[in-house]
Amino acid sequence: MNSPEIISDAATLQELLQLKNNQLNALFEATKAINDNVSADGLYQIFRYTIQEQLQVKEIALFMFDQAWKRVVWEKSGESDFYIPVQAQFEKYKTAQAVEAADHAVFDGFKYIVPVYHKQQPLALALVGEMGSNVLHREDDLLEFAQIFTNIITVAVENKRLFRREMEKKQYDKELDLASRVQGMLIPKKLPKNNMYEFSGLYLPFKGIGGDYYDVIHINKDEFVFCIGDISGKGIAAALVMANLQAYLNATLTLELHGRKLIEKLNQKIFSITNGENFITLFMGKYNLLTKELLYLNAGHVPPILINETECELLEKGTTLIGIFEELPKMEFGRKTIQPNTTIVTFTDGLTELENEDGEQFGTDRLMKFVQSNHKLSPEIFNKKLYDFLSKFKGNVLFNDDISVLIAKFF
Image (cartoon, rainbow, N blue to C red):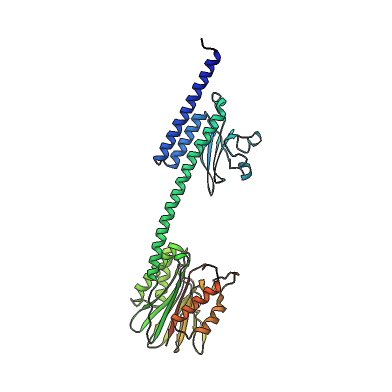
């Protein structure tokens, strides 16, 4: 006859084999679910069911970290305002184990803690209540399983999150690249040059896509408009506003919609698109070849510099920002008879706000001195020399904003 000890050992071995078989089946089902691309919520439900079933527990919680802790599983009686303990308390527990008696209140009465780390950083935290009495003698085996199972589920969810973020980034990069190419198409590659006037542009978009815009638009054989603008914000939103600005100006200027009416309708157009959240600083100048008169308006833009042999002034008259108010409060056009060999330097504030390695801004005074020393140059040579001057000034500092310059020279 078999002794009681042999029977007991056999029963224990049978129980252990059944436990391991159940755990292997649970791991197999979880792995299958992961391979079948079950959603994160589905994996959380598998986690809850499996841990409760294997450990014979009623109370269970799971938290995931993604910039902040988020509770994703919560099975506990009564209301609770439980939050993840401070880092120092959390890091006391490096593997699945019983919560120390002194920390029961900290962990809201949960009996066991199962932390998950990724590269020394906390990724997830499972909390488990009291195990059933019929499995409590297998505490070590069950906690080891809980650690393995929690790792598998939470790492799978984290991989899903990282994959989704990578896909979103790739999609965003594609959209950004498209917006950058579209925006590049809106900036004229070739500007007019003849024996009466000459233009040259310098365009340095921040991180490949920005909100700066300039153009020269012929209205008829005797008149043209030149303009420069700066759309608030960056990226795709700024590029879309810029595209609307460019399309609107090209469409309306050729329809003889000029002056106050054009600016009012432009303001309404931009406001309707952005609802005041994005705005435009804009300088527009209309030049008449017969009268040599420049009619201009400055809508909150950094004032261009007009310079020739006898005068140097800022073109400041105008109105407030375009698109920030539903109706513009006031408007004043400037008029100027252009003398021969006059240069007008228009630019965006990225130029004057450019900083060097000491945090010093390029500034208006430095720009003014450069203009006074170089305004007799052709617009193209002026811009090349200005670019070299800016590069030398900033040193190893990267450009921190869009920089655009549009030079007009009248003969």
